[in-house]
Image 1: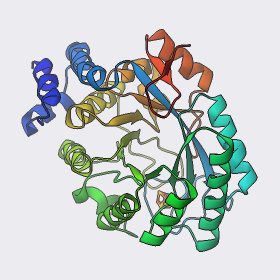
Image 2: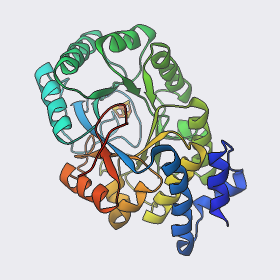
Image 3: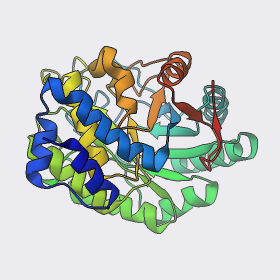
Image 4: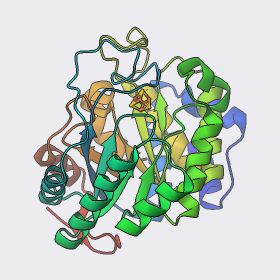
Length: 332
Ligand code: SF4
């Protein structure tokens, strides 16, 4: 297959056909570099060699009533994780300072649970306002479902972006969660957007979905047009219902990232959870389709340190961007 044709289509704003998507996902090993080169053409046209780093704070862990079968914090998980209520404001401010030191452009405050309670929401809002007055960093929050007034409160407090992932296709959603629906997730995204928040909406691959589900999700994300797409690869944690699902390979992960790029050419694409676990020694190659990374781990799993990420970015000839405008790249 001529992958360059897909890059040219993406640069013209055209979408790949279903057949082309299937071929990308089934890329033979000997054609991987051709596929990555094509995805890089698209990434370079929109983002040059810039890389955005993000850092997560798990601001409330476990104690969730939902049954998302991939999640170690769910009501149906017996995973050995830390459980704690919402952190105090000071800890959230300290986390922002650490994120800035890690050269992160964005600090992601994440809380487990179906939706924030009113006291929890007030605490997040106060913390965000304090961070905004003390640290020059963009803030994304991921707090579960939001109604319109909660979304407005976050926006008024200074939140820049809201994360709420679709995770999988509409068709497959009911197989991974029964306590809420795909449609409810879309409603939260709409409330966030209506309040003026940028959207971060991503995927979690490797949960037993088909290749058509992968493609459907990529097209749904294109339709939604979020500012960023975090691409997570399911990292099985013992004690979660999906702990036995293990079929991702480094090759498959890279093919998925390329497909996400061809279908969402101008969107920030982040290699997110599961990067270290699934891509292993091929992690640097993920920078050809993707332009964004998490550093310092995830919610309940560890990850690459900032120093290792800076080194990887630099060794690949890419640049970490620290200014929110994205216009000033800093070489390290
Ligand atoms: S993904 Fe979120 S809503 Fe679902 S079980 Fe985990 S913490 Fe709860």
